[in-house]
Image (cartoon, rainbow over all chains, first blue to last red; front, side):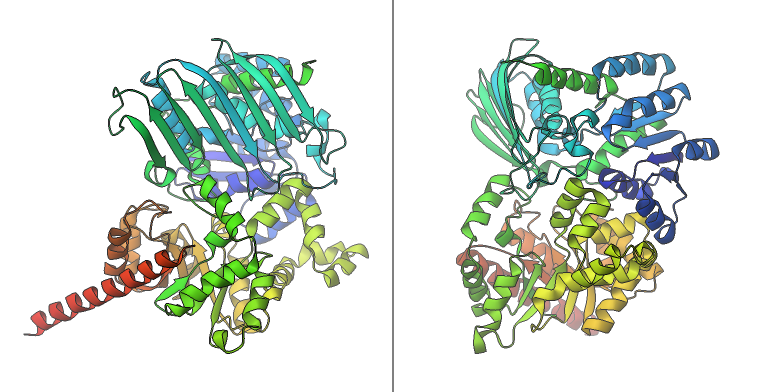
Length: 336
Length: 300
């Protein structure tokens, strides 16, 4: 059993807590949150040990690892503190507000041999996992260009009440939302290196952007665009999709469906020339406990597996999440 | 409960295997009358129970049902609460306390504004009851003998081990609504254990059951074992594994299992509705004959 602590019990923190609470290899030793409402609810209605101060959790419970799901502005100091104390870390996305701090952390985890993971859950969605396999097989040939889009109903009126409306705290559609698709492109297509054009638009928010259009280029010279809008309430929930054009075919993929076109008959097993359609239900592995999507349980299984030494610590590492932080900094600074 | 129940996913753009199809469906059913037309099809085919989320759109649909006179006089609705995305999106936008203020029923808001935070921090159970009442407001006057807790919340309570809350939900539904509480879950084995631990026995549980084992968390064989045990009243949902399974193979599997009281399905086209109902009825007859002949053989 691994002793796990949780710092930050907001929406993502509570979701992680629930999955950790059901995990056969995990003993949740404590939960820390500053909110009186949250700590009071957890104290009265659950059996978790609850702390108002995370330091107390660390000192009293000595966890093997912590999950950090606080607002982004606290990530770098908290993660640094854990590494200094040799505590393994899972931190929510995005990784750090400032890439400089992220770089320092990446070099420290290597020295201290810390198991590290960032909560970019899309990589555990089976349609995207299969896309990675197809692209890595080389049978689609060279990737020529791509386009990615994300839409959902996060900010649908002018309220500006939480940290998500404050640019200095990691708020805004770029860092809090577009981070997902940028990270996915980094993983599937190639390391995003430069920004060719960027337009950040406010729809309801006063101080942050609600939509982003952006032309990008990978280190291998692959061009593509992203179109992201977190103020679109024609969507019930977050929708993420990618179109990837290749020399020998094309992929259209979202969180539920994968459509792949092979121009020639040189195809992977169980695929054929022309269009192929695969759905999440036939691709996804089962999980022990399900909440909102297999990917949330699978990413935690991966982290716990790495702690136990049964799986490699090779997806969503701090190092790959830092690449996403770096391209977001470049988009923010870009002047058309 | 009837053998076949009609579901609502198709009406509100919920599709587990195609984002594109879910968008098309939400446009197709943009008017409440379009929803009623499909309910009419299912009703004509003999399905008299509609299982639906407490989506805001249900206010209009329920009004149409209430005003359709004799045709819907014997109709049954199983509300499933809450419509979780509404709250999840609000928590993202406003934070926990902001979301609480946003959805607080009016009479409760008064005590909050007076600064009596003690009410809020200490009496979460009555707060939960008020939320349940607010969700069910649009179902007044309808026949709702079973009221469900949706899977996102039910499974969250399971994961967090909030036994007092689930027990309080169970009591509230029985006492105030004189209805049977039901639980939707993606984790049947763990959920049944959790409910039993909280002294909720022989519960109505609606859960994914399909030939592919899709979203049968804890494993297909654990589900089959529970079905044989007869320790809960099961409604099978996602019988087509979210849409990919072969229709007749899928129905044959579900109908062959013991311990499934009802089968829930939804569809947006008349011929699909009729086809599914016909296949379930046909398989039920085949299974009945199989069981009868096995029984006869054992007696003789």
